Image (cartoon, rainbow, N blue to C red; front, top):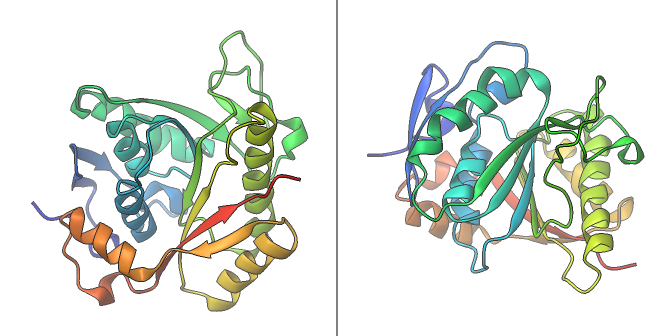
Length: 256
C-alpha cells in the first residue's frame, strides 16, 4: 500500500498511512480555521527520517503535532511522546486520531500524551502539573503531571509558515532545550529536528538565521540524499519533485 504525498490527498477525510511498524488511519479536515488539521508533507518526511535515526528510544516532545502522524510513528518505535498543539487541533484531529490508533501500535511501543502548548505564552509562565496543557490562555493546575523535561529529542514540522510565529516557535524550542539541559546536566543537549517546506525562501532563511543569531542554535542541514533514503525505506517511493522543497535541519543548543 502506498502513502501518497500530502498535497495529493487534501480532499480525503481519512488517510490510510502505512509506516515501518504499523498502518494508521488518520482523519484530517481542511476547515479553514487552522493549518494543523490536515496532513502536510513535512510531517511525512520528518517521520520517515526520524524512524531511521540510530539511537535508543527515550523521551520526545513535538511542537505542532497536527493530525498525529509523527507522534504515532515515534511511539511505534518505542519513544515516550509528548504531542503538543493548540486546542482546536487537539480536539478536532490530534486527540481523536491518537485514541483511535492506539490499538494499532505494535507490542513494545512507547506512549503518547497530548498537551496544549501555546508558543505565544512566555516559557516562564509554563507549568508542568496539568494533564492537558503546558501553556494555555486558560491554564489550570492539577495533581497529574504532563510529561516533562528532560527530553532526549525535540521535533517540529510544517511550523514555519508565517512571520508572526517565528520568534514564538524558536523561543519555545530554546526553552525546551534549556529546561532539558538543566534537568539532565550530564546528558547531551537534545537535538531539535525542524522540517520545513521552502514555499517562501525569505521566511525560511529568516527563521534559520534567527535560530542561529538570536537564539544561539548550531544549525546542520540533513543532506537531501538522507531524506531520499528515508523516504525509500518507508516505502513511499516518491519522485524527487514530490518532496524537493523539503528541508530538515538539526538544531543543537550548546551548553552555556
